[in-house]
Length: 301
Image (cartoon, rainbow, N blue to C red; front, side, top):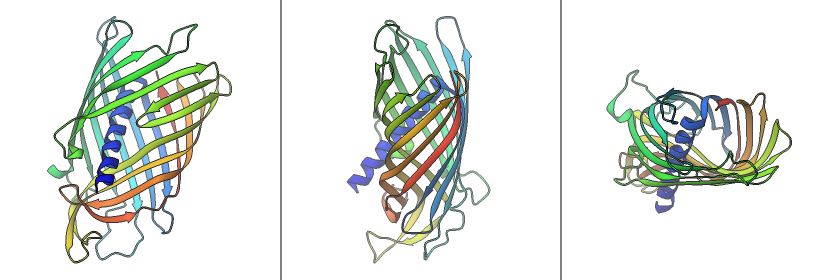
């Protein structure tokens, strides 16, 4: 259980860094993920689209950023179960965010973000309180990535809090990027660690390790035979997936701002579970490692 809780915390850190960096750099993105489940006919498919709208407040680098992030998940659950899996193929989340960022001295930037998310299977065809999640974060960025004649680098650190964790304290955020050669760079931290090789001005390859996942409330709770306490039936309130994977990625720049990307990998950790209202494990759906494919387009600053 302690191991699983650490995975959930890492997943929440992943969400915070991805969202804030997206608010600062990605204006729009569409992507598709396919994740088959080895040892069963289950599969996970996700469509994601996001758009951020930066509002310039002054000429000193201050912006208000509003955003919307939609994720539609189709979890094809083919395992034989004692409970109803209807509705597992319609997991949806939509998050509205509001961020504020401004420049500090010595190439530092400060950003603050708040968000409200509805994540559910919406089988009652309406929104309920348990569908709602809230988050907030503060982040500092030291950006030397545009320095000419030196080895560019960037440091990101801060704190993130989310009600998904069910814990009354924030989590740390850290990520470090450096370009150590005209054709080579690396990034270390959460959600992604990679080493990238620039083939030319338009194309790049990378080796990476990263985190991914989803979380959704089940509006009609399921009574499930627990895999930790087989003698007792437990109530499953939500479904979550946390995966860690490694693989290869490719990016192609159509223009300076429009990028196609694809990642192919294999999971190192595959944790799909039903959990109760206290975020305790009720049933492990699948924990066998398998292949993973993700591709998309993004428009960045």
